[in-house]
Length: 156
Image (tube, rainbow, N blue to C red; front, side, top):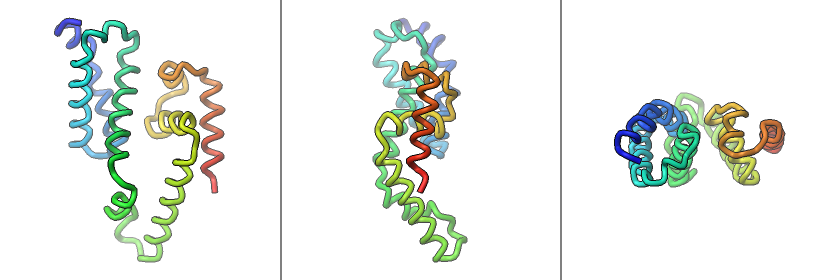
């Protein structure tokens, strides 16, 4: 792939990739860094990018994976210490919220990898069933069923 082809195919998708990164990372600077990292990886793969039929889906999936890797590097205890619970809540409510968050995180970690991935694409990234189908190759009906099962498993 030439430089001009790369610029005309991939750079227009920058806004989409940024939105995915910002949604997952919830921080403007981290999202910009993740997009930059994505474009560096894509540029390194430029000789093979001609084979990609759906650049938006491929790039979004790569962006998601890069963001999830960044999130995994944070230990859950660090996230809790940084105050995911509102600081204005009374201490007993903060404790309750932390315990609830810890419980949800444990339940998510116990989901099968395929359900966890589909739930992330649908709920966190907000992709439609059809978009997820293009990324995963699964039928939209199968995706709906798997997401529904994952949600049921997360209920206390």
